[in-house]
Length: 418
Image (cartoon, rainbow, N blue to C red; front, top):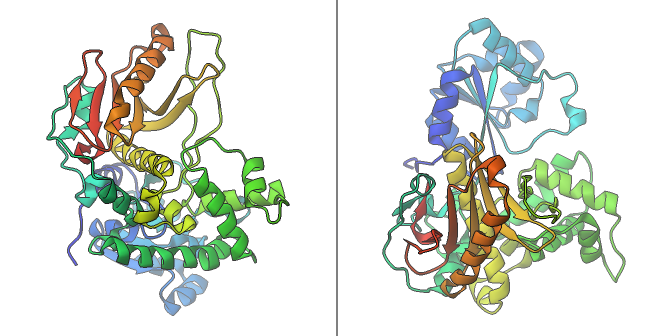
């Protein structure tokens, strides 16, 4: 099967030029192994060979012999390999020797005795495919160009809610590339079952009730793209009006985060002119909006019957893609909300401290309100301290790309790329 190019490919190439080994991390099924394999010249699959156990007890360096870069897939199955790779990097004194991939972050207790890897390892984060990578975006509008002040232009995309709903349910999983929405639902159901019954238990380091895992994930799904604290999730996921224990729910959320399935959006900290207080709670999000559909057993038709929830799922999809595109331009994505009610669905902060704000609206008719909110937010930010926004952007589910008279850019997700 021919490799499907990914936006993260450039980040992998860049890291291989400066680090002795790199770690490509992301949720299971997002395409890490195929991407790492594309950039590798040899490989060892740590969870797929009895010979690995023998080598680990005799001479682990045998696993690292081969043409470089050498892929070490699912390294966390043999956590002591981390130190072995580190020592081998020190011995060889060369860049681009190893690519390690993993679908979970070990617990703190499992990291005891492992060197931090500072100075030897580079890290590349992956997630599922963006709309542009999936071929669902024309790519007529570049985020990098918007940040440089270019005015966006694109063809007009007619409102097609059934198609958007199908995309939200299908998700950006590489394994779904050639599947219909109906087939993707079945594949996603299989993914969800294995996630809650096998992967979660293994990552948690002990027995867990899959039913409770699913109830917690359903609560997260119902509150997708919102600020929802642990107490609310515990109450929502509880049975017969009896909330789950908050500490237990926090442990479930921690495990989902270590599996990189839950990927919350942190709050932006900045200087503001008013006396309003900044809200610090993260927005609840999954690695792909389709996970919420999996948890709630949603079909495109069900999404169409609840347009308010579909709007939240679309916002999650737009934030997902902005994270991918933002990473490609060296940015980190946050959300903003203060006690006065001013908010932005996304704030992209660049490495030089400059920033851009984004609102997401499924319907083109909501652009006016979103633009007013963005301009009010920009006026409330202390621009003497952090500078003016490099762009104010409304991402929509229809319409055409253009820049308004107030300087706000309007861009359909169907036209956006990195």
